[in-house]
Image (cartoon, rainbow over the protein chains, first blue to last red):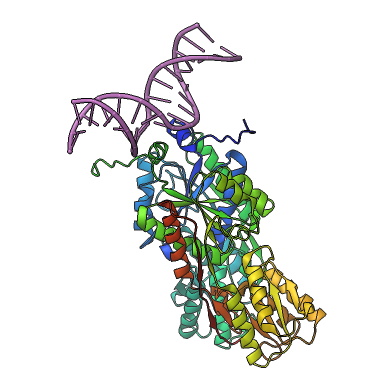
Length: 288
Length: 288
DNA sequence: TTGTACGCGTTATCAC
DNA sequence: GTGATAACGCGTACAA
């Protein structure tokens, strides 16, 4: 059997009604940002490996062009297998497509507007943001600005909520919306420095944006952490490679992926959608 | 037809002998490095999008654990569709598996030991390395070290060959083998600085390693480019984000992906394996 | 326990 | 051209 090099035909077994042997990977971003997010890649990889161990299944990523939602929408229509979804924007119509067709959907991060119908695992973003802003205030920072994530994504709104929780008196001039990219963080910081030259701390909603913020501070001749403290979020690899290294909030990536896959597997067996929230942890480094 | 929301069952059509609707993505690296290489990701994404335009096909990535070859070997045995292969090491046994089973293989980079049996698109690594070393010599550098890529990968051997072509008198003390990673570049540079304190230039076989080299130089108190010139390879995104920015060799990524997909599509139609080599271009920035 | 039909949805082929 | 039918390879349910 094994000696003859025999392997069952996946198409035939699927056609005969076997349980799905693959999981579709759906990343709801515009085409040029696909596979460009180190956090998502790491998480995806971790899931891929765990899934591989169990049933030797693979994940098929799906590429989308144009605006995030439209692209994923059309592509979702072709999907047959369970879907592992990342960066799902608020009330993403692709999700409706999938749910209508009985496709089990597992979201990474709270699926805004679909909390009851799709399974998800997310992290306690609000708490993390609170922790980091509180840390900045304890270090004596008084004019703390923030660069948010996209406001149609759960991380964007929840990290901003945490910032508001902990900031004391809220000043809209100290808030700029970002897009989780390095270039976005750099541009947002330039804008903040122009708008509020007296700020003494910046909390960026991602480490990549924080890295951009560091570059912008350097260009503007502001010393970090002496003149301005900079904090990130995610504890991504880049957080330990900047100068100075970034204070950040650590997401337990490995356990996160573990939850994602185990919940997904549970959906395979027909369990109801469920939501899991993972705790996060403050990591203090040289940038604050 | 379209109004009823009908979509043909991919498994059934495949079972009935239709042409493959998917391409398998095989990255021959140890599990933890999968999806971690920005160059590979960008290339993969580009292929994904082009492939999507044509026949609305997707790519299924395959995860492997353990040593690169063993993992890909076992996983290759499950593959049925055409394979797009990256980072294929010398005489990779997974390739034999695939070829035995008539699976068309398209390699990114010269598939060492399989040049005649699998199609490939590669870049003129030897020429690129020659160009960059010649550039360093023209700037007056005399003790030019190199951090190579893995020597079982085509980029590793060919970029080293180009270095030897242009270096004049070859000194083994100035050669350290790297692994294309940031940490590897950093460690290799520390080793070089210990071994040959008088070196005045480092050519790293990838931008990521060059970024690590910059960090090591900074830690050692050596100024770049005043004391030591640092050059990379790939023209990856990181090359424009370091301080100073990296002199490097630009690979025409977009056209590279175009060739990869068009050759792959050609294999679909039963054409014979073919090899294509793309030209590269020197990009001079502040680090030299 | 071991064996034998049938059905899954499509493509291909052969009559018509 | 059009329409019926045999594969494709594996699950599964049912019979022995």
